[in-house]
Image (cartoon, rainbow over all chains, first blue to last red; front, side, top):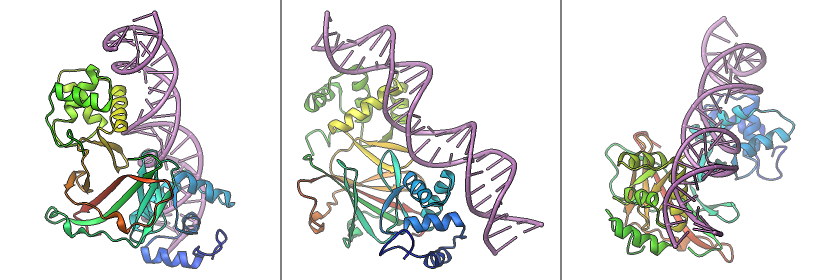
Length: 144
Length: 144
DNA sequence: CTGCTTGCAAAGGCTTTGCAGAACA
DNA sequence: TGTTCTGCAAAGCCTTTGCAAGCAG
């Protein structure tokens, strides 16, 4: 439990643990960004992360947020979600799951527990592997 | 899926027909962009469309390509594919299908004939419908 | 020490917009 | 003739980068 959260967040030690596991050098900024990000499963833009961390009384620069989230995504702590052409979202939930996107409101929900059957896929090019699957279900009040 | 969607290499009359069906006012530029786009099922960026059309001896401006592709996507002639944070791709194949993206090479392939079972999904918010489902399978020479 | 990391500001790159002129009905 | 569309250039916006100063080990 950390200063941002009531029930879900990782505390500093858990984050340092996580960094150790993913081989990420801990810095003040990275720990603060991670604390903010892992308060709960959520989808945040770089801007929201910047605002959120800095409103917590710390200072992190925009460049560092971008660098750090790029690093986290690279190492596998978070997942980039490309849903909206306007900006990238970072997903603090890195378990296998899918997304429902409400195009009217911009809300993004996780869908847990639905596993895709990829055996029906055609053969992949030789020497390649599936590194990720993204399923995005767009919903709206409008009919399709 | 409609009668147009699996019919590629459209001639001028077919395109005018298509425009009539989707209620799009035909202009020289729009017809030329459509002719280029619907030569075959393909995924093109705005830049590629601009280059392709203009190399065909016509002239279309960048702004018009963006306006026109926005219009086509809105009307349902083409689908926007958000795969790469760098740019938007427009997909001339508007039948139900999915995508395999080679992250090493940037190549994008269609997967036809694999239908997702959406009955396992949780209930959607009241009054909403699924308007679109995007499944993107990222492949690479690297292991996941 | 020695190499990463940070942060500011500037640059980059895709996309949108303002507005005058052209095309269309 | 009124409306819509086009095209140029400029502006916008998210993201990346260059580089000097500051940390981590």
